[in-house]
Image (cartoon, rainbow, N blue to C red):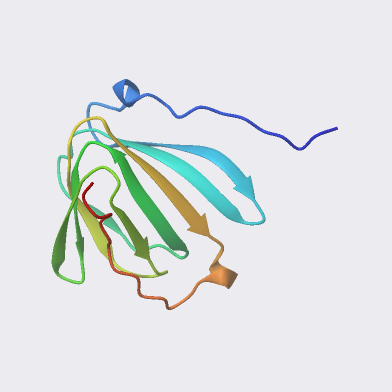
Length: 121
């Protein structure tokens, strides 16, 4: 029997009107992959997670604040957040879609990886 698995991303039209919706898509060896759908935010959402997180903005737009620096994110932009890096989601366009990969705490690192943009085509 094959270990093959298949799925489909949730459509951005299913984003909540307010706040966020998180769906776990896959989990293996302590690594969790989630899809996040953002609606309007009544106030910024604060995070301080006990795991490393790599997140990419798939559709929409958002603004994160990390270490007192505001990052405007567009589709394709990604950020690596080492565990216990306080950050907050300041703004998200309604229907913004994200993919997040969470790494288990025992694998947490002190890596510092800046946001990168692919070269313009």
